Amino acid sequence: MRSVFGGYAHPTLNPQTFIYKNTIHYKPYLPLLQKRHYLYHHQIVTMFGCRSLLKQIRKKKRRKPHKSNPKTHKQNPNSTQQQQQDLPTEDGFSLKNSYPSHNYGVQPLGNFYFSSSPHNSRNTGLGNIQTLTDELVLDILGLLEATHLGILSTVSKSFYVFCNHEPLWRNLVLDNCNDDGFLFKGSWKSTFVARNYPSFDVLKVGSLGFKVKDFYSDYLFQSWLCANLEMKHEWLERDNIVRRKGISVDEFVSGFETPNKPVLLEGCLDNWPALKKWDRDYLVEVCGDNRFAVGPTQMTLTDYFAYSSQAQEERPLYLFDPKFANKVPQLGQDYEVPVYFNEDLFSVLGDERPDYRWIIIGPAGSGSSFHIDPNSTSAWNAVVKGSKKWVLFPPDVVPPGVYPSADGAEVACPVSITEWFMNFYESTKTWKKKPVECVCKAGEAIFVPNGWWHLVINLEDSIAITQNFVSRRNLLNVLDFLKKPNASTLVSGTRDRVNLHDKFKKAIEESFPGTIDELVKSAEKKKAELEKPSFWDSVKDSNSGGFKFSF
Image (cartoon, rainbow, N blue to C red; front, side, top):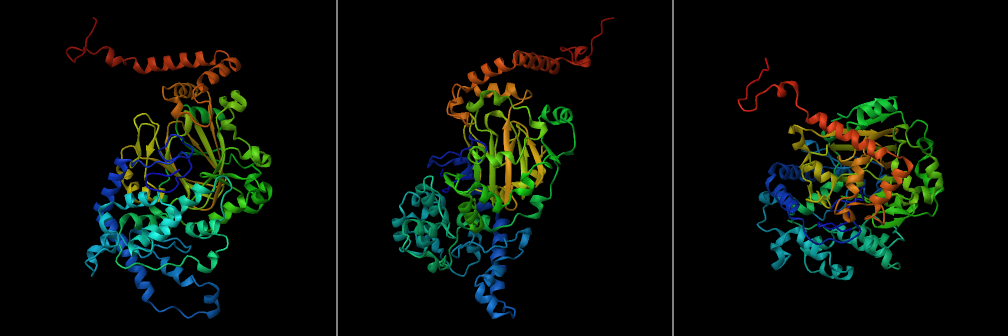
């Protein structure tokens, strides 16, 4: 799917987000665009931080290199450049250890005010369309074919930078690869050329490109920065989730599932064969030529791991497949549902149940932007390899920078997860209702209650299993959700969205007679108790505001 900012969005659990469908959206989502525009042009401190970042990189370039073995430099021509970029910066920012992607000399707009040149080559090279925003220029270029992009890139230095914007070429690759995947060649442009012109040896050309002098653009620079920044320590240090180990099912139900509170569970995966077996070699061997869902396409694990090892971009593609156990039964045998989540009432539908379990594989930086899990279900997510940063907000708190539509069918949010942390995370520290946060490591599982907003980002190469489920605690919520007037838009994971409510309710009544009526009576009783006035309210005179006595 193409978001309003260009590029394919992360696959997420939530089919209701604005950036999830395998369809193309060209209509700008104005509130978010306006917010992003405000952030770029009014957060002067951030821009000065970027200026400092580039300044330190330039200083590093002017230093004389240390003496070293010449043979080493021949074997790794990028090592010097890598050292130049891998530097700590002001405000705790630092670039990733891997070799950064090319930014063609783009600098943040704040640097323009300190430039000796009176001209921004971004504007002079665009001619009459320089008044358009960078987002709109890229949206227009996104309508062009590859050949036209290539020709246009020779018109001016400015068009050269815009036409080589990696998400444009990523879209071209993914729009045309159908379900046969792709072989990543270090960059999306090289991947497109290698795929469509096999006789052309892209390895001889590599990812070389010249840097344009005095080119200033907040949008393009932040896209590059988000692709190359490490997660700041202060983004990871807050860990306020409740952790439990060895609790009983009853303790879990009464303490967390019934009050709808998240919890991180330790030790409940200790018997999983997957914890010992699941590494790249094992998965490639056992999965063979089977293809798995990666964004809008299907890929073998061999090809996906080749991509994830090289990719360094703002929104890395995420392997997120709901049919993995059908494709490779051994994967389904390598794990078992933790005892806390054994009750799954959607199972009464058999093969007609909505998608409910996924294998999730992704490199550092991949993940899911803010969403609510589909069909009002709860979920658990177990990390087999790697680690994940979680940020969760309760149902009554919309995360900053997130703009859900009135009917809940669409949600607009920042282009990348790193961008959200850069621009919005700090503000949550002063909120009365602060988010629940944690880093979930291998061997741990997190319970995500229904209705909770959550964001997840992989801190390293990670493999996980997640399942959505319906228990007696959230059955009524699910039934109410499935019968909403716009159910055909909101319901996900099944072809028969309109009739899912009736099928599910009928199956529950047949399999568990009287359960729904019992739950309804219990909910009504609880509601009445909450609305019942307290003793002091009962003796208070509503007219005078004082107390009344009957003696």
